[in-house]
Length: 314
Image 1 (cartoon, one colour):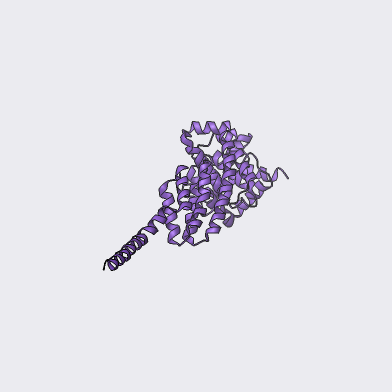
Image 2 (cartoon, helix red, strand yellow):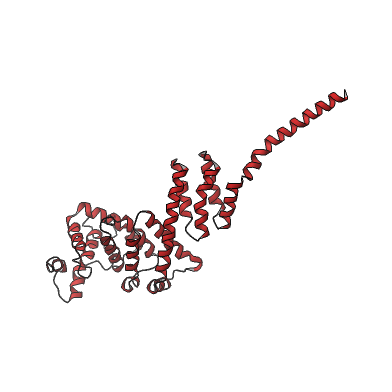
C-alpha cells in the first residue's frame, strides 16, 4: 500500500510539474528570446521609442514573420540611431513593407539602401548647414537648431530625395544654388526643406535637372510661399502637358538663353497665373505680377524681354 501511494504521488507530482511547465514555458521563452530582446533593448538605448518598436514587432508577428527576420529588420534602424541618422524612415518603410506582404529579405534590402542614402545625406546636410549664408538664414528666420531639430528635418528630407533616385551631384548643385547669397537672403528656414524635397518630383528632374533647379531657385527669388513651392511639381506637369508656351520657354531655359531669369519667371507666371490648368488657385505669387516689366526695368528699357531673350542670341 505504501509503495502504491508513493507511486501515485510521484505520478501526480510529475503531471503537475508538466502542466505548470507547459503553462509557463511559452511566456518565459517569449520574454527571454535573446536575439530579438537584445536588439529591442539596444534600440531603446539608442533613442528609438519603445512604442514604435512594439508596433513593428506586433505587426510582423501578426504576419507570422519569425523573430529572427524581425531582428534583421530592426538592425538598420538601430545602426542609424546610433549615428544620429533618421531611423524613423527605416521603421516606416518596414511597416509599409509588412502591410503589403513584402518578403522580409526584400524589406531589409530597402532598409539598407535607405541607410546608405542617410550616410550620404548626413555629409551633404552638415556641409550645407555650415555655409555662412545658410547659418544666417537659420538665425534670421528664427529656426532653432537646439537639439538638432532643424538639422534632422533637413537630413530627413535629403535622405528621402536621395532614396528617390536623385544623383548626389545634382542634389549637391541645388544645395549650392540655394546657398547663394541672393537666394539665401530671400529664403526662410521652413521653405528650404520643401524646396529641396520637391526636386525629385519635378517632371524635368530626370532628363533636365538644370531646369528644375532654375525653377526652384526662381520660385524662392519670387517670394513663393512654402505651399506654393510644394505645388510647383504639379503645376509644372500640367503646364508641360497642356501648353506649348511652357514648352517654348523651357526650350529657352534648356539652351541657356535665360536673360537674368526672364524665361524662368515667365514659366512660373504662366503656371501660377492660370494660363495652364492644374496650377494653384491662389493666383500669382508676389513678385511675379509682371515679370516682363520687371526685367525690362532691370535692363533699362521697356521692351519685351521674352522677345529679346528669344531672338537676341541667335
